[in-house]
Image (tube, rainbow, N blue to C red; front, side, top):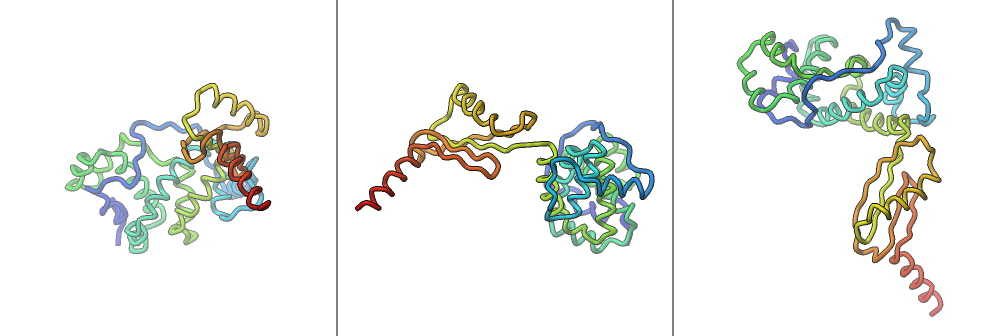
Length: 257
């Protein structure tokens, strides 16, 4: 068995992308990768700020530490959102199991797959009859995976945990949110809120979160709420709706009867 363009990517030719990624050149602001094992150990094991001390996945934790110290948290996050989708496909796992190439060849194949996903369907179809060198030349204009991403993929392959990439990716995504101080806030209201109403609500919310937090705001309309709004701030829930007041009143009436 030989990876070549890859058993990993051969089945992908002519198929639609599982997960679309942006086209065009990609530049990385990350610092250079460590040059020796001692440097790797340091960035993998030195905790990133704001990350929880206890995590459900040690591989995601080490990757988050390294990504922070190399200034690559967002790049690696984007890559593993894509890779998580790829490794949810049982055909990818089967191809990995059947492959006999080196870890380095595997990583190159994954990078090629990433480029194939960026190419349009018509362009991918044109590659079917090309040899490896010609195909790679045609794909050269597309972006590569981040250097830290490819290093971690190789490590996961060597560790025998490559099939758990979707789990690692999900755990890393949550850790990245903590490191970047993201705060997810959802506002649910009985009717669409005006910009003024949203501004008033956010002025109150900002009193309870760090000033340098990155707010990720989402909104939804739920007519069953009658009036007012509900706030979900990470794991905290605040209900200031007419429905809540009504339900509370009815429970008191029922208790008194």
